[in-house]
Length: 302
Image (cartoon, rainbow, N blue to C red):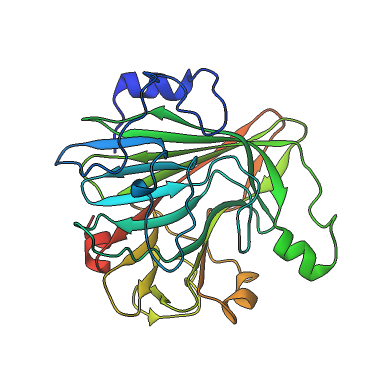
């Protein structure tokens, strides 16, 4: 997807705003995030109405979190609150995802955690999560920005709270939704402010234990994404929803063997970039897509 020039400018010059705030371009009037959208429209904002929340066995969104959606798909991103549940508690990550369902049809969110990661043991810990662009007839954009925190689920299991020391990294993740796509573009930039580092950027998607099965191309049901796959997915056992982590066209996802232990117990997918060296003052950006569809074909076709 090619961003319009004025949107690129907005991404690079966003002003200050409180965590969970609508930030630059705020008109002072909260958008109606429960309103269905038509073709060619997107919308992003802070959730002030429970009718705008998504439903499903794993739905975790609250008032004050942020929503980004179009005619066909919707994603809820946790505000910079530090009380999330399950494996991670930090904000700035997708906590709910579903297709847009008509009327009173119940939601089928399967997401327990959908988290960008810097290496296996560190996740973003944003100071701010805000709307860069509220959408309209162009892409909507939400940004999360801040430092990193260790995955407490891992440090607790290892009984080693200092296993992942602070490296002085800054992380910014943009969530960009096009009006005509079921794919949320996710772009994470890691900046080495204190010292040079060697790292990989990726994602962990943990699904509902009761309803989700991991799936990979040329494999079918699986415990984890095979190394070199272009995508991996979680599929609802009663159909009706497929969520996928997809590499950029022409690229693939790298497996992390550390997640095989988790895969023995919960539905989890993990896919990473290649490991790169980032010099002091340098930055590395990894682009991938989060997709939602009624079945896998809707997502992989897109």
